[in-house]
Length: 209
Image 1 (spheres, rainbow, N blue to C red):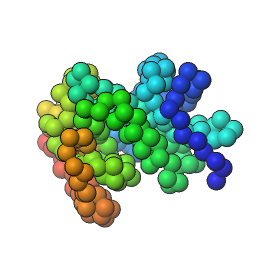
Image 2: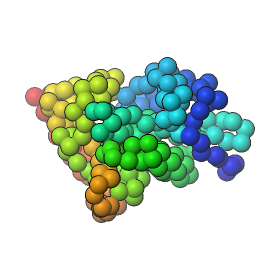
Image 3: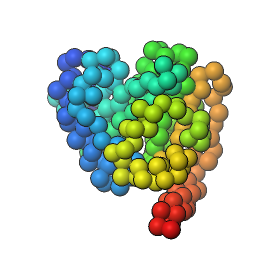
C-alpha cells in the first residue's frame, strides 16, 4: 500500500469537505445504522479551526477523516465523523486517525471528558484501546445541540421513543481524571456481535408494539 500521511487539517484541506461528507453518507447507507449526515460547510469550519484530522496519500487522495466537537462549555469532547475510504479499510488507518484526534483533543481540552456514539465494533475496539469504556447515555453530554445532530440518523426514532435512553449506538466515555480501564467485553467479537443482535431485535420489537 502506498504511503499515507495523517495531518491536523488546515486551510489547505478545505476542498476535501464535500468528499468527506460523501464518504460519511455512503458509509451510513452501507451500514444501515448509526452515522448521521454532515454538512460540507460544517466540515470546512472544523478544518479552519484546526479541529480535524485528515489522512491523505502522497498523490493527495483522501483516505480518511475525523473532527473534534465540544459540548456543555467544553466539559465534553467528541471525536466525530471518523471515516475511511472503502479501499483503505482494514489497513489500520482508522486507528491511526482516531489516535491523532484523541491526542489533539487531550491537548486542546485537558479537563474535558471524551465521548462518542458508535455501532461499529472496530471503532469500539479502537476506543477501548485508548481507554474509553461503554456507558449509559445518561453519562454523556446533556447538550441538546449534540442530540439534535442525531435527527438525520435512520435510527433517530428509536432514540426519541426511548426518551434518549437507548439506541443501536453504544455510548463510550474517556474520563481524563480517572485511570485507564481495559474492557475485555469488547475484545470478544462474537460476544459483542451477539449482544448487538439481541439489542437490535429488542429495540425494533418495541418499535412495532
